[in-house]
Image (cartoon, rainbow, N blue to C red; front, side, top):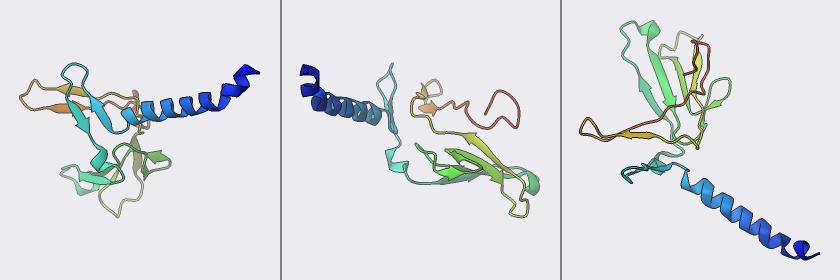
Length: 132
């Protein structure tokens, strides 16, 4: 009977705990060694694009990246997808990575500039193993 009395309080406490934990890793990371912070929140909800510099137009690729979310689509919801840049080539859409908020980026300062690296091994495996 006593547990029933505290049930609403336990549910609220759990909900707040979940929100706090989820919010700490939602597009903001802190390097455990240096304490430096990477904040990608300003990029949330945006789709960034890039094109590789292939010499052959039929093998040049366009990449779509939606930071901190699975906001792009290629047979599934993805964080990063790759397509042929040539609009005349219709066969080609690959899932490069899926958003996973538990992945901690690695900070490298050895080159004199700060570089954060994310490793997502959860993309498609159609180009071999391990996954991209």
